[in-house]
Length: 541
Image (cartoon, rainbow, N blue to C red; front, side, top):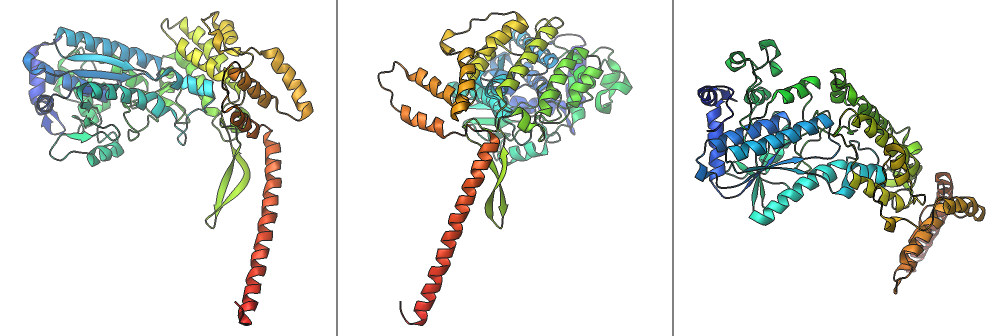
């Protein structure tokens, strides 16, 4: 083995051979990883989140490859980290440094390991959806972010490797103790007589969980926090290795786990957000290694703990996140969000009585109103400018995302931004003039919009509907064939452009009319039934 030497190699070998993990010596787990690695030519994809579990499985795999002969390291290992672009900044820095260290260590030790980071598509990022399209902040009942920002990027990476190698093995740091539901899913898809399970959604991809039976103390043991005093050992783990060395052991690739331990310690021991590869992976919830914008839980206790433990520069992030969380309150939904969905219709809530659907006068809310999206964007950019003075490499929203948001605002299905507000907001807050594409802008602007806002109501017409009709005509002007234009005009006119109160009132009149018709039909049916009964009595059929 070639190792970064902070301690004697003999001690390291002794640790592998003597220390038990879930009742078995570590050498047995190393040998099992080597056996699975050598039994076929399928490359490995290691899901790396930077947290304790994925770091532990990374150490185990690295040790296993170090123990193989150079000629036996015959297939590639891709270490993949998913960056949602709204990860907690200190975690992003930790993951980036870790990936770089793994890459350097693998090159030094001549291991077939490479590090990779995947991100969501520009039009599917958190800000493109929330600020651009107006999607509400995620909740437990509407967690739209997981698939777009976590599952899809990793799935694309795996699918790409499948196309190159036909089959791949995805190595995860999943543990049964950490998630019983995830353990059940893996067990359900387990292949008989094999250490592998079938991927739940991707064909030709298989799952390998080498530390499945480990406890949390095993995880911290292999991460070697030897710098800690006995009473400070993580989760109460105590053995001779914590007493033997004053400094922490380096990872096999040369990185240090002190940063990782401090992250957990400063966040009150909150868990990590696992590498999400499908919908069966547990949500991040209260986890430490997740998005700073996460509103799935009411309070982000992990970020609060980080602020209390010295990371005070993160306080603006916490406040912004809390603003997003409050906007999901049932009492505030109708203030911040449109009554019209993105399909242009108001959706009434329904109840069930005796198995029948009953329409109510209440309705579900749609996307955030454009004026609130503009306010949130202003706050976000202002916060980025303030924090950048302290964290030089901090970027809360990327330039491609700004372009994506602008595109959504200009083409909003309900509130088209004729004023083209985003370039003005960016310049006002950051002093930047980006390369804004003129092709996306409309020939009509704020002056024309204000004129429509003034004139349209006098004629009982929605100004927003007129804007969309003009946008449609502009988009199709100059085309030789304007096929489908009447259908598109018809759809726009049929949308619910009135206020919520007017739509509810009209809906009430319609329902009353339908009820009268229904009662009339029922009366006719009863009369017809009575006539048939009388005819049968007279012997007339």
